[in-house]
Structure formats: C-alpha cells, structure tokens
Length: 132
Image (cartoon, rainbow, N blue to C red; front, side, top):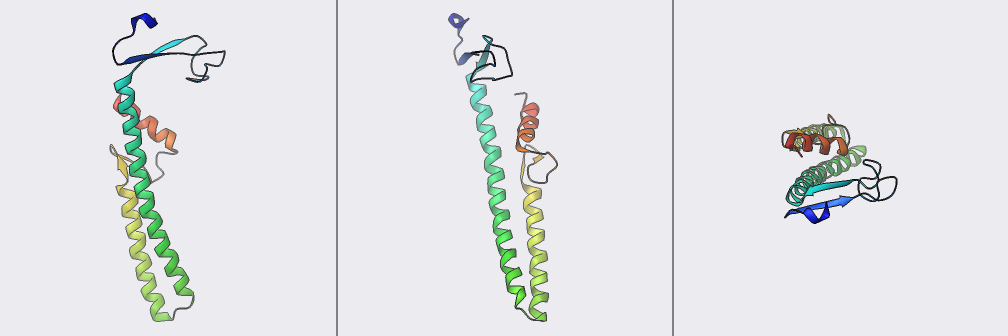
C-alpha cells in the first residue's frame, strides 16, 4: 500500500500487539491507516485555536479572581462604609467573570461553563461537528 501514496496523504502502520506509537490500543498490529495531511493540519490548527480561546479566557478570569482576593484582604480591616463599597465591587467583578465565562466559546460551544465536561470531550464534540 505504501507504493500507492497519494499527494498530501500519509500512511501509518501500527507496530506490535498494542498498536505501536500511533493508535496504541485503538487499532490492530500491522494495520495501516491513511491520513490526509491537509485535513490533519487543519484539525490541529482548530484544536490550537480552541486552546488559545480557553487560555485567554482563563487568564481574564485569573485577573478578576486576583482583584477579588485583593478586595477580600482589604475588607478584613475596612470599616462598614468601605465594606459596602467592596460588596458592590465584588458584585461587579462576579458579573464580569460571568460575562467572560459566557463569552468563552468556540464554534458555538461554551468552553468554561462546565456543560461539556473535560477538554477531551470538548475536542471530540467540536471535531464531530466539523466532520473530522
């Protein structure tokens, strides 16, 4: 089958009993699979875009959490008037965090609201939606 290689396609043959380095445990020893290089590159780029969006949103959430932490530490020694102001600031920060979480989406799928489980299931859902 290697003699019939198509342009921009590559073949992977599993090694050993467990499937070798590629597809370990997913396909049989000696089985050969064809991959479209352009499609694989596109899929990897989409995965990287997903991770970039999630990372940027998490960095924004981290900044909000650090602001909240600062306010909590300040509230320990604050008087009643300042505590009321801190409560208002905390509410605004909670709202900001909710907006960040709601807007962290990729192809219509929210990445941070917990509705999709772990990152593996998120990537699987996105790939299945793209026909990958």
